Image 1 (cartoon, rainbow, N blue to C red):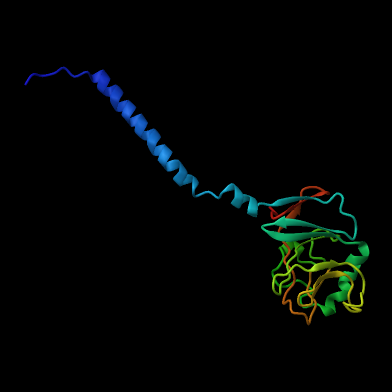
Image 2: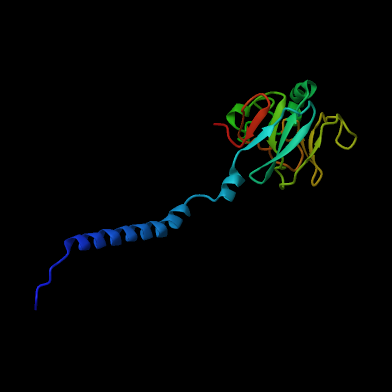
Length: 194
């Protein structure tokens, strides 16, 4: 056997080229696997906070927004409606909001950051229906103690304008208050309070 002369430069080049191609291939295979650990854009959007413009929301009006697939109500209560909240304490299941259906900063008489603006998840705590907004005072079908609020026609549950449940109705607890914060006087962020 004759000894052949080894071209070390060519061998080094082939080793480096093969290693580089293998590294690129490994990265191409690993990238989809690693990306599968992160939520999709659709999943992020479903749980993402929602920014709401309340600049055109007049006193006594309600707007609906969607957050995490749930209806969220933003209500601009009149000064009279805010004042009437204290009159209902004796007729409510949890007037002081002792149960944890709201963030700590909304554990007050009006269940909100600003007394006039209510932000609540618009789902009845009985069977998950969406109650209707009834800001009118003492309509015949809701009784003399009605000072405005939310009425669930499915089973007759009643909530005041702070989304607190009346006693003696099927709904067991107050409506949920989602985490939220004000970005400015006219911009509200629902779903994030950090």
